[in-house]
Image (cartoon, rainbow, N blue to C red; front, top):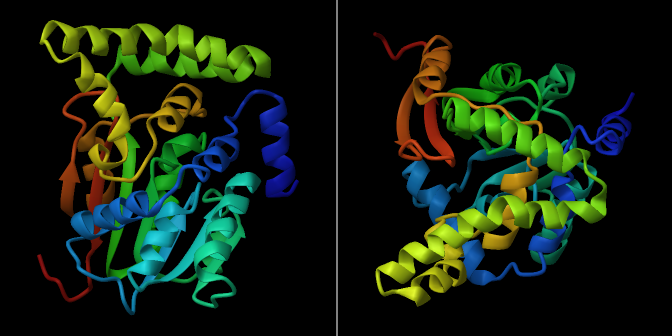
Length: 288
């Protein structure tokens, strides 16, 4: 079965969230400020000013925002996603900003398809933010991306933080969302997320800052450091399935055993968000 056929079957069975549908809506609010925030995120975590002359692969490109950011920073970009509509979103951004650019390739592919990955070669930057934990085989996906990194290159990933019982509850909530008929999903999301959002608002109200909550939503692109949108991220939080998690020390040990060195770490401080990691793949001449 092809990737496209497998993806369609999983969506129909309620075994996978339609990430691409959400990303298509996000493109309607994408603006220059959000693109610049995405560029800042890459420059900050990778500790660079430019990506000129580097090969960059965006695994699970989603909206295509970070592929676009990498291309604007000068990288030669290869984008792929398992979700056909996400691929369409990435192609749309390429059309808008780098139409017919030979240095930005967009394809449909799966990070679990080792045959496909073997044909891609190596990259100076392998980027996969908040994707590998949605494959249904996270540890296999984490292993599969390692050979794509050229020696001395960077691996930039983000994985949901393991909160134990809270994470298991999130798994069940996400699974229910995807099994529901489409018309019931938005009411369900409001039922699950409404109390959480109400609590955030009440906290600001008690502090005498009722407008702070609204400013948080308005300024979310800047506050998230990634150019994202509050509403579309909320849909992703409740819908993103399959769903797996890992503790920071697990991810660190996993890549240490594969000859990677941790260079940057940004944790969720024990919260529900993703932990961000930048690893460098060791060279043969690095020594101990």
